Length: 132
Image 1: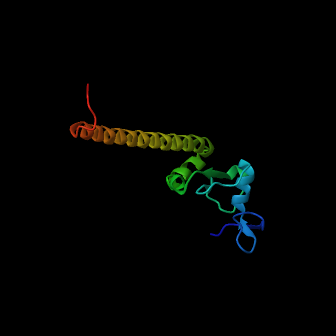
Image 2 (image 1 turned 30 degrees about the vertical axis):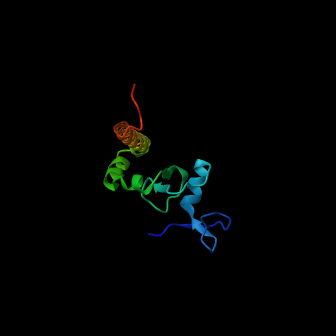
Image 3 (image 1 turned 135 degrees about the vertical axis):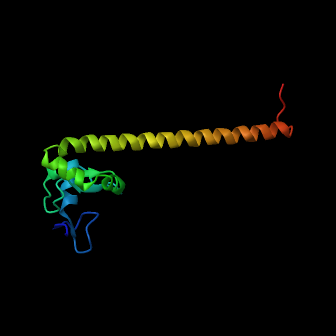
């Protein structure tokens, strides 16, 4: 299924013919800014023709978007729980991603300290540094 297109020749993501996918324009208007590189617009009800603001959800990345299984969404839709779940899901995903980045940063810092320690031990062994 193809997305609906609208004519917005001045939009940075417009094709050479001035057309852009409508859901992108609607989502950007909803969040009050252009989409950042990598951000994806998700149709909450999986209906690509439904570009109402309440049906569009901006996700940080394609990876985040692919992590949300359609079968779960259908269950949540049927039970009227999808909106609340999305807010929780996105918050949890972003929290986990932030924690993973912090862990990686700390691991890199530990590795740098180990390298400095090894260099210092070598300099002591070579007599470049004198201990009192």
